[in-house]
Image: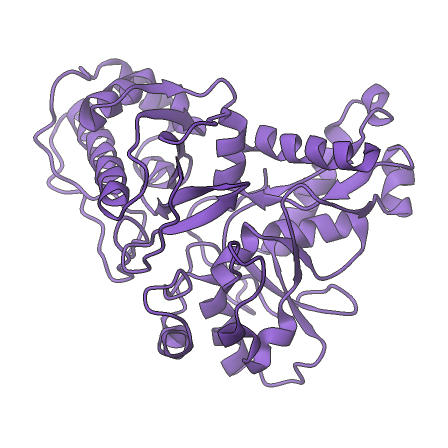
Length: 401
């Protein structure tokens, strides 16, 4: 799994800017090097999960970025009025952080010739480095640019726009795209028939890893953000609350992603402090502190409000009480999110599995179990990368058939 950390924004031509593109590419190559040499010839397929709505505008001939990446939690509110004017009311794209808003924002300010431009998501671009076929994505990543997974096509209201020519072709997650490029294969010693497959978003990969296969089962990913996915028989979409549905075979993964989560905790505490302070918390005791922990201004789900300010005060003298209040406040946001999904018509949640780094915190799990009033447990597989590996396995099996 490849993912941005924190909330640092890349500013074009700034000396302080993080070169996300170079960072992602370097990380991918390091991951290939980390595969033990004696196992490389056994690798049958590769897939990648990436952050949803992380958007890259590239040259459709060279694959080189034409603009700095738009990160997953970046809001392009300047494009929102235009997007709302063409999309159905409360559609998933009607949020400033949607991929379509990022595309429209870029389209409106980029002056040079746009004929050679193309849009890819983070996972798409990294997979392109491996297979070399530009312009391919999966229907999970394509959701926030306007792709309709129920019709399995881009809708007419989107295709009628001048920038629709930038949209990538769409395949199901885990679909074979092509063999590993020869230069990559020979450099790292992978087999000739190693297949590269379409990927997915990180929270969906975490859901796949948890093996939650029955409606009513849900996965909360506690990483730098808080992402929720509930397996439902009904599809729910409402941009007012940042709610959207991903297709999962004949069912739907309903949910959203809040900006609260581990990024807030790491702004305040070190990993060692988090561990030590957590051990001193009584998870059966309700914290009286009422926070809305955000790393910066802006929230996506369970309410879409780009102007929402973080609320992390008053701070008590005791760091144990302070951490307790933050963890419980995040749990309340999670509970509000699941309650909202029920109110909007999704299948009622019955059990929650936890993935991501926060799944390791036993006291936090107990707090969440009390606040949610539901069975909460750590998923057997908590890493989204495991879900991406399952997609790669799916692609390999398709090649055999």
